[in-house]
Image 1 (cartoon, helix red, strand yellow):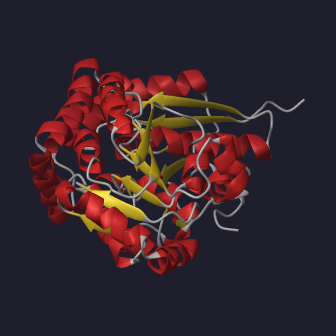
Image 2 (tube, one colour):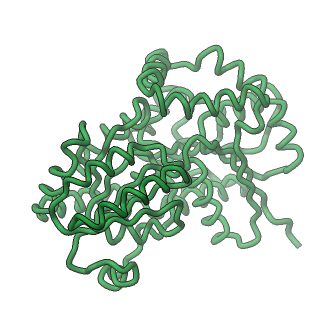
Image 3 (tube, rainbow, N blue to C red):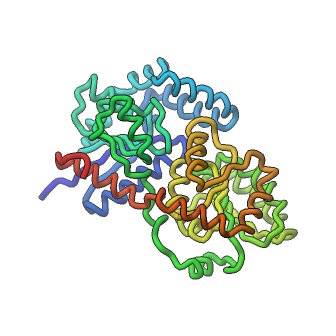
Length: 384
């Protein structure tokens, strides 16, 4: 009897996207090999305990309270094309803990859905003799120098532009594959919208506006809620606030007042497992441009309105989406209600945005990545 293959996923709890990408690949691997075993871990947990918590919490606090500083640091390292001395020290001091994790779990392949774990895996290969294949799964529409190491076995990326950038930095072309960002394939599956609206208890004749603030509810959702009070068209608004319980309670209190004095009917949800249902029924998505959320919307052919992207990777994701004309950006929430209603009154414009999203959506990305991982297990060429 063959021993089931094991896959170790090194993610990070700095937003829900890194873990969501890992989970999508895990499910695809199970479809290819039902006995496969996978483990998803928070990479920063295995860093030096103090340093890991400092980096993880520091990132979350910075993007929440002083995002401009985060943007400046991001751009500085991007221009330099290297990682900082501090980051390099954290990676090297964490390598022994990761080595112990790998020795204990004994995976066939290591999959990194965050840049930090790519760095540590590179050190394990270079300094500690790691021979297990390592895959870096880039989860945005841009790749920062923090991700790039020449000794990883495979990178999967969202676009040809990212692939070319990696190759220009010395990554072997046969080690880069354009797959799209891994998501749940159900975002791309056909659904009867009338039946779905009925199941979700929406008026079939009303448009649906979906508002998302990321899996940890860090977006400007409260300001968006205030802006929605200016809407005059009848519509359903669904706000997905993730795991931020304080935000959910505050929004629910605001919703009771709004629903009594407005043609707009608002529904506030926490973390849900069927976002794809709501994306399929929605006419527009108001969101932060995280790589996973944006990829899900593209697969569902859902036009996006981007509000307050975090400087750094989200700002670059915004530029990509605007350039492809599948999204528009609102610089000030005061203009949000007007923008929503202008678009809803222009169905031809919405249809154009949907059509432009079609070739950019990759609902099969997780399966593509899973097949590449299996190739590495079997010693086959990376690309098929």
